Length: 401
Image (tube, rainbow, N blue to C red; front, side, top):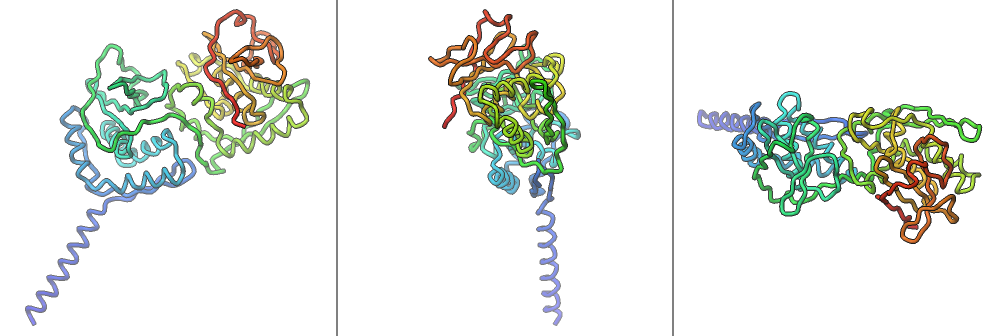
């Protein structure tokens, strides 16, 4: 009887110990809102790796060795599942990784640990991400084939690596100070990162507020109640200056699109095509206040069409992108973007050109300047100060009918 009793209590204690161990090793569940949806993930205790508030090559290698040997796979699986379900492009997927790293290793508590988690999660998601040190600064790079003009990069074997966290070091001088890339190869990290944003998240309807935009066209005042969300500003807060093709093709979110484009189409229904384009040109030109980026932001910054609708001020880049988007969505006409040394404007291909046309690849385009000038320019007119100035066609759009 005594032997049986000991066996019983021994079995019970073993079961309790196994249950306790399983509970302790399971880790912690996290959940946060991500632009209209909820993201959930579980972090195993073994993948919750500490890091001191100082940084060097040896400490980073130690962190990588520890977390690589942990049970981190559940986090990557959750990220990948969410990305596929919601069809996130790379830029939005990186925002998801940023928020995930923030949950695990809050940025304000330890910036190095936060950055290391971002790097590890992005690398284990298949992207060729790299780390580099500039004294006590931890820089985070990713391979990208995109044409990016306002953030630092370095080259390895003809591959471009652009800096994802340069905004966290506004005073850093990478032209003078040398960086030291770290050798931390991850076998699955081969994919190039793209900044192309071709789809916006489906924000919740309650995330939007209505903004009334009005402008005068031919003695009549037109009013538009447009649904806009500040979350779009958050998404593009650190978005770099990309090439014009990528920039011009950033879409509106669904709610904003539904509140503007159908109304514009109804307004233009009884107008000729050329008059409708003139209307869109003047809407983009006159419905918003102009301010140069250097004054507004202290640097060059291109607003997406939705940001331009949201913002109080915008410049010629922003208006060109908005005008392009509106003409494309409503008329889907061929267009070219004309870049001057201090200005960018658009030209549209009609059946019959207006004014002195711009010749490009054997086709005639009529200038439509969506930015205010000293004189109220009509379709086919360009400001006299640009008339004899050389320009470059930086983007040509040809509809795929």
